[in-house]
Length: 326
Image (cartoon, rainbow, N blue to C red):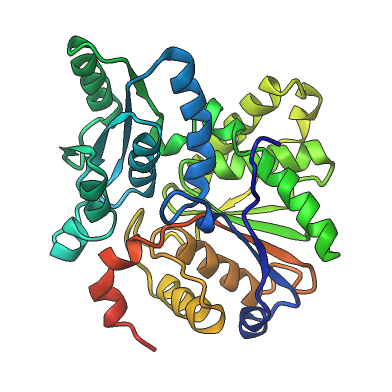
């Protein structure tokens, strides 16, 4: 494994009791540095390595107004002495000043990123290409990072997560029954599936979509798993690739808050002091809770929830959270 330190694996006994499962654990990737971390840190380590290879001087990333990926790209650019441009799509529900200027937006200012605002219907890839050409014309060497960091480099950089889990589960004396995770740009879920297959665990993942409907998410995730397995020389496992992504916690779409996600945020915060967010982890936890209540899962099997970060987003959704206090 490439990482010098693991993110913690923490048992959540009070939340487990509250939602009705026997054994619940959090893999705390939200605690990875820099800043409030998340799964994007692991992905970006792969792109930082690529940046070194090509002598890049500027990272270019994209996302929504409150993109965690954009904020962490800017943070890692600072740490490695690189400039950073982020192309951010203005969300159609983002008129609240707290949403438009607080949270990750505020942190991007502190980190000195160059922010390019895109309209809701703009092509983000085309805008990143334009920023890349501009940088080259200025004598810079840019590196474009795919949406969500979920290209092949970023997804493969997540594979050690499963190795970490195997070590930590052995030390904790548990065998994971389910691994629950958000499915947005598909990379984290795809890496978990590939890693579990390579370790012989089978596909024990529970993917909860926060961006696409389940059909779109399944196709994209399966394709990325196959790419990873091919790159890892494990084509023997491709026939076993058949992921499941659930979209019952998605609500109106990406970034739109839901009552179930808000309830999950308060439940995790007040029982474990674990901070989920309205866009990613709150919705994934809401999906998990719904599956437990409907008995679609075996509540006796240990569940590991991959905490992919997003705490800064809480401050952007302040008004919604404040009016939803239990």
